[in-house]
Length: 592
Image (cartoon, rainbow, N blue to C red; front, side, top):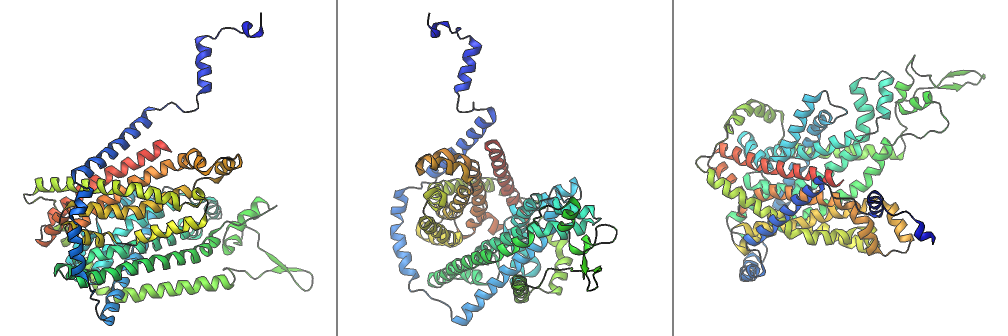
């Protein structure tokens, strides 16, 4: 009898164990199947919305004649005189800079209360998180409508609207950065007897500063594009002039101003990117943890503390210096870093930034009298928006909310495939060629620089009033943002497995599908749902220029002073946004 014949027969238990040993994929669980079903429903909804809105080649072909007619009506471009144009541009930039600075000032305390490791208690953390969500979900146009009741036509309305709405993004990202800090320096300060405020200023804020600077600069780019929308509700600047030209059907002046906005967005994003690359390495170096070798735990703790605290009497030994007579004498205490070239450059940049903010605030009309007037009229203005109401248009609001959701789903679907393709080609670790990656990064940057409102205005003229223009505008806009997010997620994949597969002779296509995509998949799915979230809010704003949806109802309600209807529209959009955001958080948690 051979050895093979002498093996014991496989029992059912042994057979199942052998089968389990040969399994290479995990058995799908209920949460994974539920998440997959939810994504399938979202995809089906996008396809259904695409078909329902009649977005097809025939629609675009029928609009070709309108496009030719529009081109003849907008050419030649009619630019304002140079002094007037520079004045409008400076007014817009002043409002954007001041509003972004206001959001940073407001976001830091809110983020500290919202972060789990710095909050003053669970109730305060819930309230702070609710404030962040509310500021993010309420459209900036609504903040502008409310601010217009207080400040009237002018820059102060735009500053308040941009500042309050930006707290939703800046506060959330800052709170997340606070929760991810290294607790070592803060623990050292606490052990030395430092109070809560000293711990925050000495250990928390220095680590959060790089993220805060990057977020503020990114928000500055977004606010520049948003300022065009605010012009349609009375905020002064180039957006207001653009809205006036559109209302007069003066497309030569409108498209000239739109071109100025487009070029400004391109220039602004390029400059802010250069500033980020210049400043953030220096800021990061300041917050980097000190390295030590061969020190005792006591000296290591002293190295992590500010010099004045580290040498406090009775806590840690002070440094000493050798005197000329051979003895020792206390060294001269140093309470700040030396004035080297790096510190001088940082100080110069800080002074210039503060000066720019102050000049912008003055140009925007920020004054103590205006703030006092706002404090006195805050409660009466809030009372105008409460309680919510429908003014007999409840059915119309529900129908238009459904149209807004259709526009959002269709726009996300239109931009999904091009954004993923551009994101893959813009990821350096996927294409393997820095030149190719930089080229497609530039393409994404150019698409992102086009404000969606300008796209919607052009498409409304070409395709006519209605949701088709809104969906196409959102689709083009989604390519820029979603493409960038996809490229960033692919480049953030751990390089170790990729290098291992390349070392075995695997091709880049095999590496992408076997290593890069599976690890980046949860983030990519989250980004797609985030884009849907953004598109729902954007679709609300595009309705202001005739792109369909509930935004048209919002603008009409504000014009006839039905502010209860404005509140109802905000609550309806807020409910949809929170539903999509909750779905995104759950799906990312399941696939993580």
